[in-house]
Length: 294
Ligand code: SF4
Image (cartoon, rainbow, N blue to C red; front, side):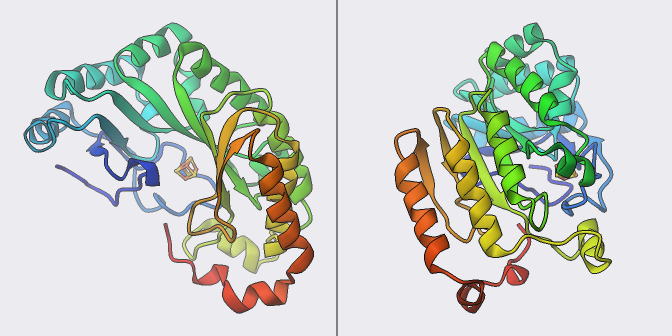
């Protein structure tokens, strides 16, 4: 299998076949992101994709899930994605789910009819970086989308029957803005039906542009207790049926809960933590600066 750059895949895709179809990210401007900073975006040639699928058909013929590798492979035009899905179905007829990462803007260039066709061909689950419902934070971080864009485009996925897992990056608004971000992000998701919401906590790595902005004083990070408070306010205001998870190395309190049934239980746990823990106690056991890159 060809991999021209480091592979980043969601934890849930650990057993999926990893097929490189693009390299890098078309946007590559988010201030908090470092993963593709030195990599130019490119599309894998169809010959290479076919070669990899031939290898996969020999090594993993029974595998039911394939993950398209790259920062945002869903940016590919409809016809190209369709051709890739057709080829996957040819070489891996037992594969049931084709999944990948998408920017909200990648959905914009496809109609609901096209999305329905991609779903029929197996592209039935997508990971999307919504990050926040706080437009000010999104603008400051150069995410290139608004909360309204996320609602509009994700509703198209829902209409097409494509399930999605959305990412929420707590701390994106910085110091003293957590509550606003939490309320606006819950308001955004309350209009939607994500299969799951993954909450990550903003962690600033050395090679992210945001690092310099912190050093210059342009951005002040939320404290650890502020991050937990933001998550608690988000949970309090979220009123849909979904799964919410913080199970990632960047999370101080990892959990995976079902909504609405587990809402009270997780609220109790977070409030208990907030009432009985100080920043000093946290710093004795947890140092965000020491978290290695994802
Ligand atoms: S966060 Fe996503 S969209 Fe933004 S630069 Fe990184 S890979 Fe691209």
